[in-house]
Amino acid sequence: MNRKSPELKYFVHSALLISTLLFVYFLLCMTPLFYLKFKEFFVVHLVSFSLTASSWLIMFPALKKNPKDIILPILSLTTTQMLLFLAFTVAVLFTQKPMEIVFHALVIFLIYLIGQTTILVKLLNSH
Image (tube, rainbow, N blue to C red; front, side, top):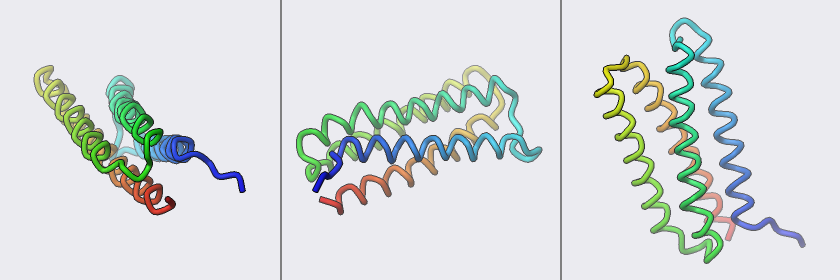
């Protein structure tokens, strides 16, 4: 039986998660309630890309070693992502940009964190 490696499963699932998340977010931003200017919309997408990149950089080496021993990498991943979000929030505050950007980034961050945790729990349960 040909089983996918944990790294490939994680990559595929997280890529699908971020693609779906950004597509739904894009559709929401076209409505008057969630409307953002293009520059702000682009900045929020950069934040979501940094979340994904940090996820892959931290989790791939951990999954290559032993997929069952990923508790510490999960904690460091979540901490790193929270620090990235806080740094983004501080940057928005210091540049005096609209706080709507922080709200949009927070929504993406929370949805991404829930989805990422779900993917990692399923990955742990499959081994």
